Image (cartoon, rainbow, N blue to C red; front, top):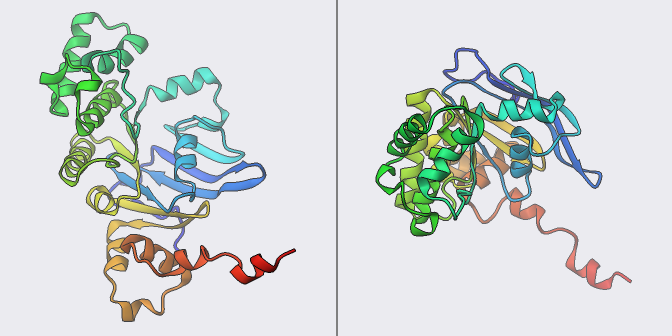
Length: 289
């Protein structure tokens, strides 16, 4: 498979996030095993893979929620793995996170949720904060809902409110955890379009963890496939599109890693991913003393 650190498309060679040799173990088992990746300004990198492949663990490492056992995560020229808690807090002000549920505070209005990072991390006066909140809510088409509470919002509106809060400090990187999960197709498509517009319009780098393939192929510049904690392939979206659309007769000669990726992209019921789930022999298990 191709080197995971291959050149990015359209990023002009500039890198704002670079991961090298990342390893994370739990109970002696490597959940992440030598991850290499990078992302540049205005680029959307989609991270995908089956359940248990390491997507969520990788995201938690990238945002400094957990510390890896080996490797480096360089963001804006600083290694997250070597930062103190105070240093991490400073770096976190430069990126935003859209959690799967939106993670809004139910006791606060939408406007108060969006204003919270400004009140916590800046010395701006209230008039300026209110203006910025209106601008961010307008970007996600929620300005008229600023006084509502999260319980009064639909699932898609909660995601958009969470995105407005993630953007309020004008981050250089946005992290998305399953942004289309639990949404109907139309609402999911609206979120996808919003991600693309923000990325291209504001030049914000986006790292999106998802297993929703329609969403992934809509928003990605490049895609990264994880399997058993390793990078199977990172490449431009077109490479994955070609593999997904490859006729069955041509796919017979693919290497195992490419067959795994193709099955995942297509959602096929048969292939190397399902074959490996067969595990040990049923008869041997029954007869085992």
